[in-house]
Image (cartoon, rainbow, N blue to C red; front, side, top):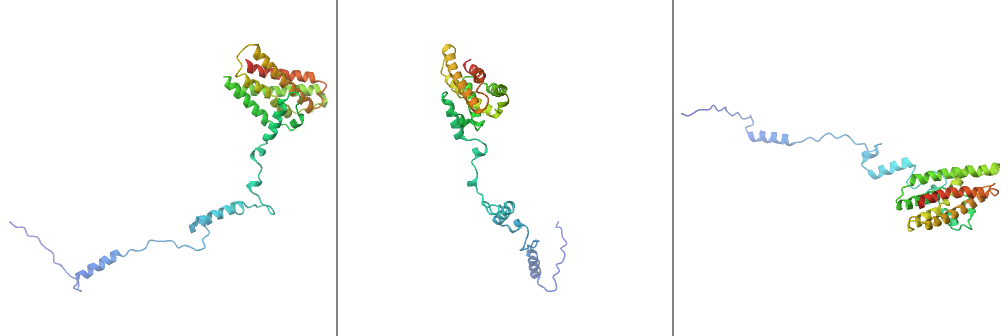
Length: 254
């Protein structure tokens, strides 16, 4: 049994050309409209709208520093990195001065007080770190102990000297700390030599005594030469210096 389907009639336009209508619809569909684009102004006040990165960077650096890099905003002069002082000089660290002061300690019979007139703490800190390092190599961690003893020793000798000198005493704490720190050089050498000397025995004590007398003589001479009012009390000042460096030597030999 066959099934019949009702087919609707096809109606053509009045032009009589159905293909023309289809082609016109296809052309209308293919025509694409351009997306919306904001108008660009040639005189834009924002640098990055022109997409010129180099000019924008130059403009920003000029506006920040008042001109091109390397130029000076000071009228009548020009500044550059070559005119800057070395970093160590700006920090107050002078290696040549430290070396001259250290060499003056090496000879206990001819110390030069003139190089110690300008006190500094760079050399004493260097000697302090060296002493702590040698003690660490010997198996002794004494960073805090040595630093505390240096501070207490400086205050102790400062008080003793000014009390003995009376009104004539002009020794300041900074210079006193500088002299005590530089005179730690014999103790540092003793600490380095003790790494190769057997523990215990009278020989080790005798060597330590020589270095203590060395440090005491140099420190006493510098204290008397750099400050007024110490000539009459040289023996008492030497005794105070002897106690200070004996304590440091005990840290080394025991």
